[in-house]
Image 1: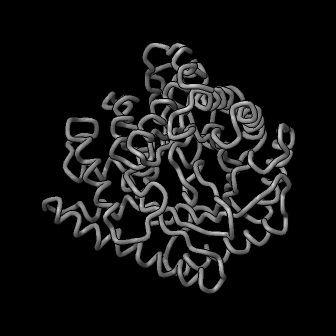
Image 2: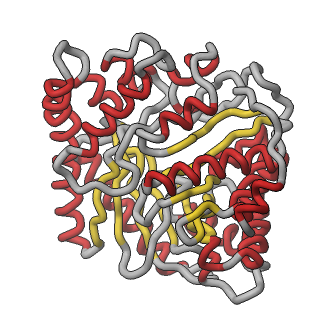
Image 3: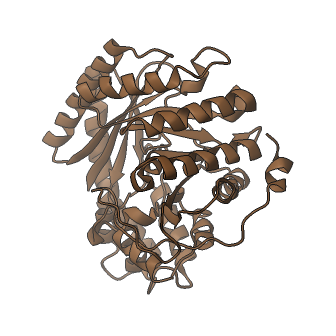
Length: 403
């Protein structure tokens, strides 16, 4: 097991607080050193701010781009890997300000490399058509405005997602004193638990001995760190996140559990069983704490999707019993903002109906059509074939859902 993310959340305003960034950098460096000494490889340290659109001057979003660039420079100086400016919460700022801030966020993401952002697409417990459209437009803009559309790695729509999630781009801080949380890369621990025969009860027992025991150790280190520094400990997101290696594959976990090939009948049942086991671990849960299925962050999942075993609709179906929603899904480069927004609306509706946190991170790939192979060269992504979209949605649905 590795630690994918040590994420610190702090309050922020419309101006970069360099002193606070320096203090955050010192804490994150200390945390990484502490976990490394305990035997864990820490992949990234991250900083999450309070929602940026709620801290700026009313009616003006011109400060967002300069803020993002200054923030990135300050965090780079402190060796902080990724930064989240938090989501635009449509229900808080309203549709007019929300659209201004969405445009400014798109510009900020195009002009930076480590800054992340999101749009919360739930308003008054229901999906917002206007917020979904704004999210779709940002995705389309990032596809056009960044190399191979890779800017979409740093943007998502969120629904029913609270603060303290350590996984990006969904992460944000609520308010109050700094608080840190831990995100795992732990598919290998689950695969170790599922490598032997036995029923679901036996697999769950062994999961407690592998993943559960490892997380207990991480929690012990985290609580000592909190006691020594005074920084609050928020918990561990128990999602056993995969990585770009077969041994760290979420699909490998499900196929070890008993699905002959991911995408075959039984995949939904296996996904539900695994997520249930994770959520029943007697540990401090935060964030998603369930099965994560990021298409281009999982070698076996990318291979199964490329072979036609899963579609966007089936991935959405699995989200009903999984942890995160749709993640790093490669789509045709000519997908319109409305195409993307309709998928966002589906994810939002599912999150609202089930009252569970879901996010939607889509990758329209410029110049690529359904069936084409992506050509990313990032250490965080594997390449796979672009998934097809069905008929284009009309605008009337978004209008009915409201601004």
